[in-house]
Image (cartoon, rainbow, N blue to C red; front, top):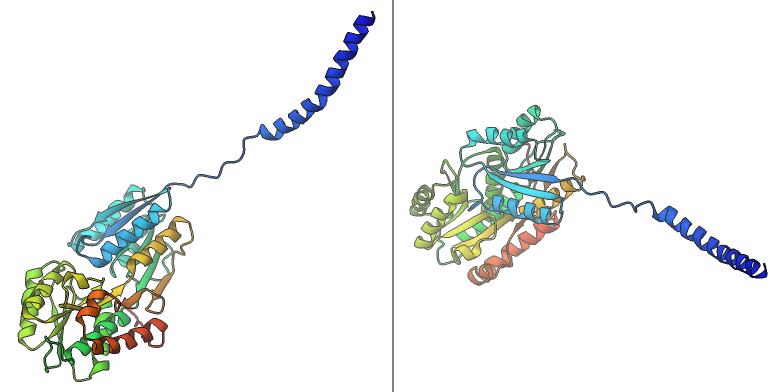
Length: 356
């Protein structure tokens, strides 16, 4: 009996010691039994970049793709498809419609002054589709965000450099005070911002400078661009601004052969033709696209807004620190150009964008 009592007592002690542990473990298990909340997985965010033309040889389109790829690479839920629309502008609305009709893309991004209006028409059929257009302007449409560069300032920077070149003692310059401008086609941003800005810059150097202005008719005919450039050089032009996409190369080759000069729009390409390309007025579209695509992916973009960005904002500039530019452009010309560039970067020299 005593042995039984001892066994009972031992069993009771074991139970007493185990109870708190069981309670503790039970408390733990009660809270631990619920699986910890996992971070909500971001929904897939598919983007289509519609290129109204082709990417290769088009500085702004190359920058658009680079900026979008950079933003997508930082967001695992995002993906990018690049679609080239080709040079037939009549086909662009149908191709954008086809992209929207798939319902696959949270965002369609493009870059061209005409694209906001094409996207607005497409958006009427697909009210849930969102669009971003850089290098375009259309306020108030809740499906579209647009960003317009102040290309009056971009044109002014090119023009001021052209004025300095034609009035300089550079080897290819002459006393005629004639400069050129070759463009692919005419459109509102060109006729209302780029060309007037270019003339303002030229005349800020010398109001007697005259402009020889030619239109190719497309963005790819390098042979025609070369013919136009040679005709202009024959007429006394010594420096030409080119805004003609793939056709630019024709004018560059002609200038190289004739010992004349080229001003380039949108990208830094001094190394393409050292000593021939003497000025690059640029747009930092890669930076702009990276910003707006990142904001779109994270839900921060404000559709319906239309922003205008300028040199003071860091999106319009003149490349004056490239080693090729420094090596080939005389110091006195660079010094005069540097002052204007600094004034525009700081906002001291600011030009207004007209109503497009």
